[in-house]
Image (tube, rainbow, N blue to C red; front, side, top):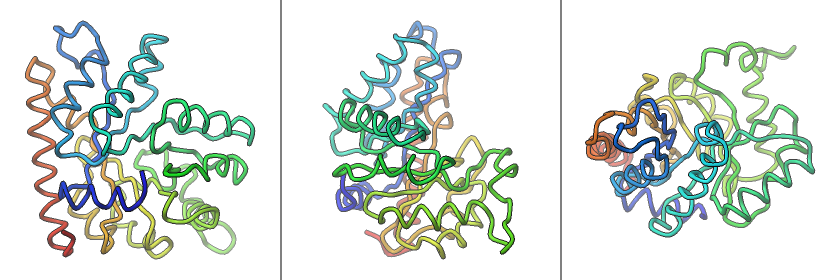
Length: 273
């Protein structure tokens, strides 16, 4: 998916919603008997009109062995066949030495044919650049996350007073441009988006933490939105597990619709249509 295609989706759907496909069997209706793929298909069908992206988190599939991985592969195939316009983000958080990263890139981009993958930059340039250079594909680099442990490393400052997360953003943004590179910035640190935007004014940001984690969509838009939007905001369990009953897909659609309506208002406020 190219940048222009993503922007067209945002304008058409008046949304910058990403639905996180993180199915927890314990929260799924008993009638599905743990069928991850059936659950995902129902969620996708119910929410696709409101979302510009879907983000399956690999951990929720790999935890179930071969059957779980097959459900992940089936989910990607279902999206490709039925909703080719949406972005598919593999939330895999890969990142290893060069030859290993090349294999990961081949697996996700060439075999599975997802549009984007999340990458951890801790090992540096040669662990990230093998994911770059694939036409129409995106690398989404962890920069400023919303978890409590983010304070352990991301805010550590060097001798010049620069926090580590800023150094990551500044350095990684030199390896590619805004047409193939995004950054993860957590919604629970929304006010810090202003500083992030000073460093990368044109890059898309993938923003988790809205919904169940308590992040404010209005604050994210206030501090992070550009004149093109520049945001993909993820909500996972706040949508897909809003109900554990047989009405789960209907309730998910209602939650996604409510978020989309708020996003439409925020886009209009920023004169994006």
